[in-house]
Amino acid sequence: MKILTANRLTDGECLWYARGGWAETIDDAEIAADKEAEARLEDIGKAAFAANFVLDVAMVDIELVDGVIRPTRLRERIRAAGPTVRNDLGKQARSLAA
Image 1: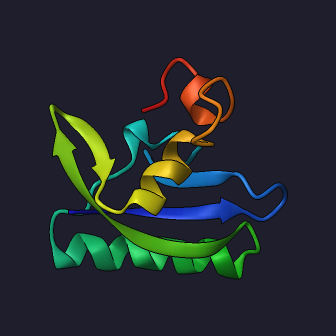
Image 2: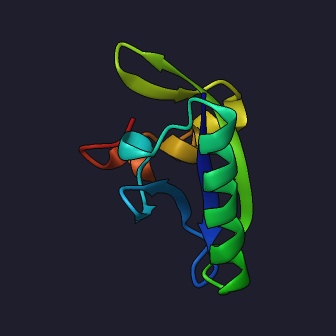
C-alpha cells in the first residue's frame, strides 16, 4: 500500500493527497492498494508539480496499524508528525495528527 506525498511550493508544508485535494495531515490520505491506483496517484502528483503547486512528489510505502496510516520509513513518520525533539510543535501538536 502507498500514499502520495509532496511539499507545498509556497511554504514547504508537507502534504498528502486526500479526498480529491491536498491535506496537511496524513490521517485521510488516499491509499493506493494496487498498481493501477498507484499510477493514478502518480499522475495526480505529476500534474500538481507541473502546475507549480508542489515539489518533492513521492509515493510512500505505508501500513495500517489499528486503522491508522503509518509510513514504513522513519523519515516519512517524522514528516507526518513533526520535530522529534519538541512534541509541542509541528503536526503532532495538532489534535488530528498521527
